[in-house]
Image 1 (cartoon, rainbow, N blue to C red):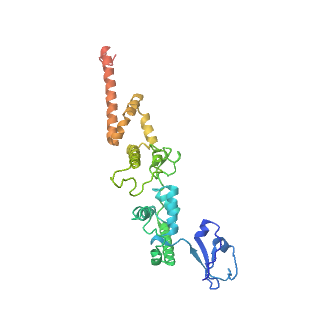
Image 2 (tube, one colour):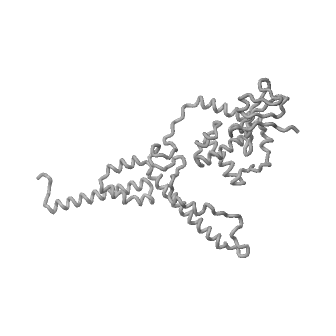
Image 3 (cartoon, rainbow, N blue to C red):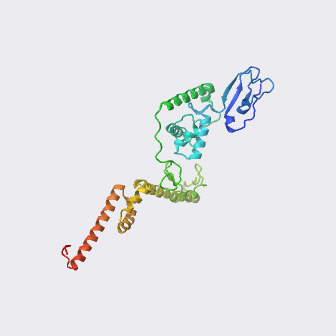
Length: 318
């Protein structure tokens, strides 16, 4: 049986694309892209006269009919680099004119909703049913056609609206340093060390249960207590973030401009009322804060009138 001959790939990108000689004299003879570009030759291979074809090494379906192994690798790599939720950045990382909605739906359907979670349903390397149903040549032809169609659609589409706020976490890009709008997270969260207590904790099916009594072992009870503490910290973190988003506290410049219009007494009163914001929505809190300010102004006016009465001032004409 002939052995496929290959040149060593120079880069990871070269390993994904190979040039195969289609001449009968070269049986399964592959070249990497740099060697093909340099006109490399050996034995029966004659670059000027032999025909060739381009082979994408990993462009075959493994989990779904319309996603290749190369795209699956780029999807997981993008999720690791940009974080889950940054679907637009992950789609740009994958390329091939994939949309962020398409990437998000594929990840949720293939990985999250898989019956073999956290592995995809067809994660068994011996399962080649998709490859038999959709051969390499047919899949690559579909992919080429999809890319060309979307490329033409992108040319005729109107220019995209620029993002209101970039996702970079630097002060020049948005108003609050450390905030990541694309992920709705902060670089330093409330109880930021909460994950350290559970990061190395492991649970196995049936572990920690006494087979005779059915009760939890002391070690498992301790793990459950630690998990309860961790969940309470996550709840507290979510409540604080909800308060931040509900009251638009991320719009720092707008809030600072409003705060400058208040007097020192009104500013102190407003700061004392801020703890109530956690128990109210934005509208109710604004009404309450305005009520406090109105009461404060009334008390000042009443005190001034009482002083004038003590000094027997009946009008301001004199």
